[in-house]
Image (cartoon, rainbow over all chains, first blue to last red; front, top):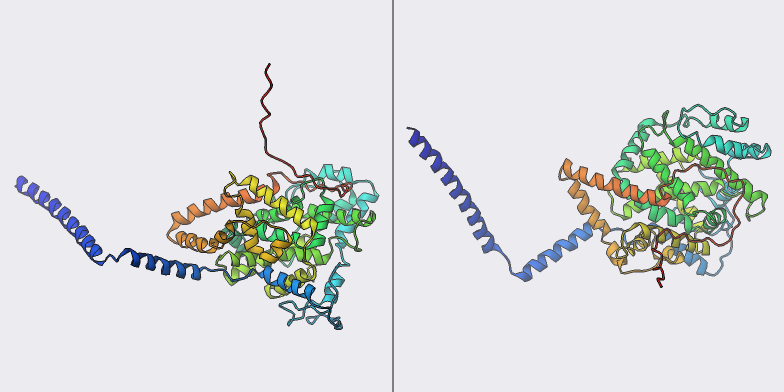
Length: 92
Length: 396
């Protein structure tokens, strides 16, 4: 009886191990079958990289850059005829 | 100094809330309460006694030392509590925002807010004139350090360090204002006027949010509002007229743009201060390989035009730094993997923040003493903090 139980447990371990090995090997076989050429890998990585960068890309210009350019343009522009200044705040 | 109140085409002029004439009127206003206090202290010859006694006053709720001049006692009592209108729920939200984004905020303060100060020529001149012999970046750094005090849960409670620090800074500003006026060293009637104080407030609030956005940090509208709200409170505590502080982020955008466009431009002082800021961080970053990352980050955050005004060097990192936001995106998704990842990245964040801000202040404990006189505005010596071994001794 005891021996029977022992061999049962032994078999179970064996079967489990073999099953796991089969799954892994099967997976690898499948993977190898589906593995693309190096060129494809490069293309795939490139596309992913582009997408990732675009997803996290900053706005093209820093806000301060927009302001600084306007200031530079204003300084470079010929002096305009002065407009009368608004004297009152709109919001009171 | 201010740009004439005409022909301005700022991004937000459609709203027209902050006209040139309005901004001009802010240039004539100082900080009545603090100015009067400082005037009384100087007239009574009580500044040395005040400075000595105030070294003991560091936390809220502390009993004021005996023998404090009356004017000082009145001022300290009047400003001992935060403004009544403070919404504490909003402040708690702001604190959470500070904690979640500590690294990014201190990066933005160091590499966007500080250069923004330097790109306003009269602010750069003021910083140089008042701190020619001292550590020039220190003044703004102290304001930056407020964020650290603000992050503390007890910032405004008894035992908190924030309010006493603010009380002292306000008096320091008033003193600088008085000295410059008395010595006739400032081309305008009022130095550190309301427009400049509000302008500074914009640099630490909405311009930090601009920088976070540029860094690719994800900010919720609620978080942004709370962050701005906290700075409104800080502004009021530091002597900005609460009536004049832009009420919300939309108004802040308008004020900030208007202020920057009225004043921004190149200056020799700006270049000098920027150089010092960069040197300082290069000393902090170990080795020299990564040194160019600091100028590259500044260039990325403030843009090429302003960076050229400040003569921020160009480097091979300029392109690389643009990848930063993508990297941050990866880090954020890493944080989402689970509590252990978030915890690890939080630890890292704490460390970077500490390094960035403590290098700004060089780990000094600040006492914000009132200077009895201003240092003469001659050249600023660059402190060399690196020890170099003495040359080999000549042996016969």
